[in-house]
Length: 345
Image (cartoon, rainbow, N blue to C red):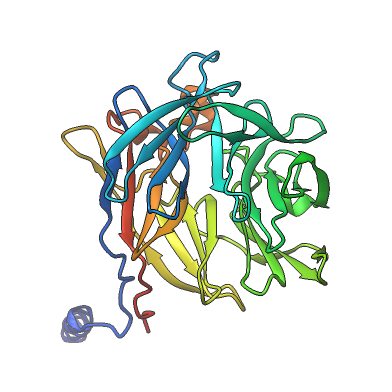
């Protein structure tokens, strides 16, 4: 019996020493693209202009409630160019994009709630879009080929739609699949993007860890019935964009990574980035609450919200990122190569 046990132990040790066929995900290297100037914190929305300049807005929970929102502009290399206060805005700004036809910069004011047209040099603003309802929570925005604007409502579970010239939006889609029922965070429909043929709109539901697919048909882009495309998408799927091959890139704010899904069955084909602690300067190493992302040449740029939600709500809403975020002194935008490694076998 002793010999058999010894032989069994030797067999197990040999197996443990033998390389397995499966490999770990090649997560790439996360680097710092830009550092927010002193006094600015919690970067959220991010977009790029045709010259490669990068525009970031913040959820400035570190400032008094009466503070204006800010727009921070970097050049294509991450050098800080200017910080602009946005007139008639709250301090809680989320997504932003340049309209592909009019060229105007649209900024979602979560605290108002409304969508603003903003002059990126002066900060002058005007109301572009308004909505109705009880406690709207405007979050992400995207466009169709005709220039219509679609905005998620993370509280009410609605996709709002308005024409390229703005105005009062109409509810394009409303569904329980777009609402949050598993907070924290208490955010449902978030990032959204059409596939390249505009036959489907994909929406991240942060609280539910799902990607929702809305079928689309006809020239007028009539929506079909929303369905859950895939479940358990990392931890807190937040920002969402789609590449030239219709792969879906999702920034996951609690698992601190980008997850890339192929567009037919939602199979994960890449997991990029991770969190590696706080460096000596007080900046996150890698991603920390990775929330919005944008393609920028050969890179993907990602904002690190680095926010402890529990500090502004209740300790019962603490998330795994919160205690780390308390130690952040420098708030950053990260970059990682826009590369899908070979899938582990």
